[in-house]
Structure formats: structure tokens, C-alpha cells
Image (cartoon, rainbow, N blue to C red; front, side, top):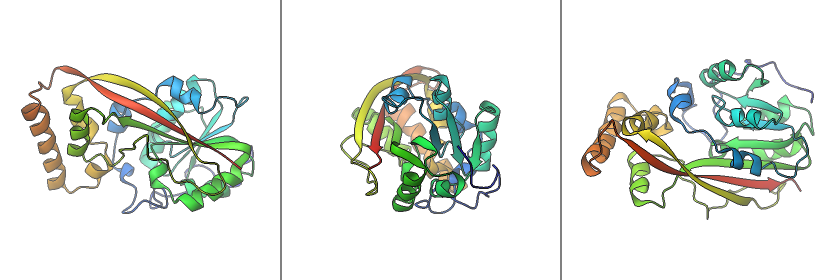
Length: 262
């Protein structure tokens, strides 16, 4: 693989998560809560999207603090990371200093990397931020023949009514349903889905911190942030009568959409 672009760190945070983002990149503001409270990805889901590829070279696009990248490393998969937010890159470098990390948006991939550099481009919690047409053109350029785009989402399992209400109270914008196929460019076949259901155990108090990692919270005014936290407190401690110290199981599913380059 040959890089055609600037060295890591040369693109500023004024460049957004992706071309579909508005109002700048909220994850420049997130601090360490994202790394601490966002759940990891189940390893079977990580392996699933790459099945059938021999020693794949992977680009993790919008890698953030390295949540998904870490699972690729654990699986022994060679990976390079791309992330626009300096705060996220700082956390990433501390956690995964051995992984090549570049500063940039999804749409920058064709400027940063040589044609045919990768077998797969992974978009873990990041596809909704990108300019679909520009990103697909860039992805097609840097992917090898038969390479794949993987669109991965960890999603609170909103088939449970109390979780659906929780996602609304949190104003979680990333509710991605299995029956909603991601829109993708003409360079790729129709995405195919693999779905993994699981759950995490955590104290009720941690849900307040998890809510603070949502873009809706990060972009809110101070009064807006307080309002969001008050609504969450009313729902968890009032409507559900939970104790902040008790542990609950929060159900999740992971969606892995795979689209092969034509």
C-alpha cells in the first residue's frame, strides 16, 4: 500500500465527519466518555463482514477512538485508520499506537491512498455522516477488484419497547433498522445484511454518561444538555423506577451490511 496524501495530522477539525454532516464535527467535543461508555463490537460480527477474503487489507473509515479497529487487530486483520477529529485521533493513538492513522474524511480516501490499496472499507457508526456518492466513488478507487464496503452499526435493540423509548429520550439519531437497506452508489452491488443480537450489563448510572456521547447532546446548548439529562433521569428513575446503582442488561444488535465492488 502506498499513501498518496499528507502525513497524519495535517487535516483540521474544521473538516467534518463526512460530507453529509452539518454544523461541524460533534466528536471534537466528546472527551473520553465515548471510549469508556460506547460498547465494543462482538467479534463474530467483525469477522462476518470479511469472511472469504484472504488476508484482507482493511481501512477503518471514521475510526474514532478505535472501538472497531481494536476488534480488527484482535482478529489479526491488517488495518489502517482514517479519522477527522483530533480528539478522537489522540485517544486512538494512545490505545492503538501500532496502527497507521490518517487525518481525513471518508471522501478523502482517494486522495490519501493509492488505487487498489484495500480489500474492504469499514464504516462503523459512520456511514450516516458521509456524502454517499463522493464516498462510493472514493471507495471504489481505493478498493481492489471484488473489494467490499462494510457498513456496521451497534444499535440498541429497539424491538424492546422500553429500549425504543430510551433511544427517543436520549435523542439517539442512529436508529438503524434491519429492514432499511443503506443507500449506496452504483459502483457496488446491493448491500447484504448479517445481524447479530447480544447485550451488555451496565449500571443504570452509566446510561447518563452513554447519553452524553450522542451527537444530539454534544451539539446542544448547556441548557439543552441539562434538559436532555433531566428527561433521561425522569424516565429511568421515575417511569422505570430504577436505582442508579443497580445493574441492567441493555439489549443490542449489530448490523453488518456488505456491498461488493462491481
